[in-house]
Image (tube, rainbow, N blue to C red; front, side, top):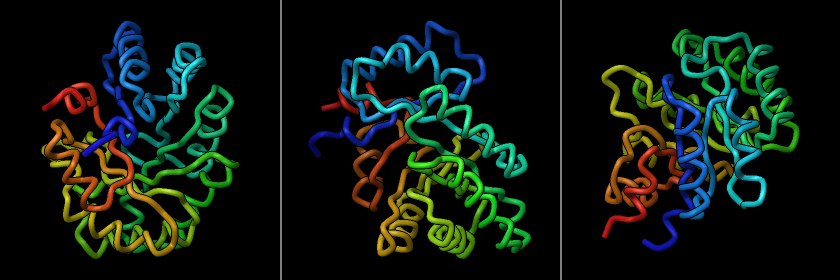
Length: 218
């Protein structure tokens, strides 16, 4: 599959990452012309400084990784991130509210962040490792109602979690595609074979820290 790099958000969300690790990430993103980088909010300004003369998008995460912040806090995180230079926002859904079937709250949570995004795309991380198929489908439906732009599989932070699974990506794609939303697969995408599998299942974007390895594979 050609142009894999144009689907990849080169990701560094490790808690113990140092500035030199981020600089390396940005240089790799420019060299391989990745679609974007994904970093925690504190490093959006650093990304902006290092990527200002490139076409690499700056993606950041809010309510990360648990999704249990109040909606207003997620919205404020979003506002600050955009002021710092973020091009796209990946928010974590409130998994507890979804499992409690408090669908109005889940929708409100997403809508509140979407409003703070203004014209910036919003991706909603469902954390599929913690959900059954019905919950994944329902979460996608709530994202449609809340007018999100993408649904995303995982944070990659669930202990013992698999991350993105092709069957989940396909379910998400079939649910949201008719309504104009797209799918981002993330979590556990460490090789070219898996990356292609996710794209064939319906993913438009790939969140991975293995982007260089993927695009350099034969």
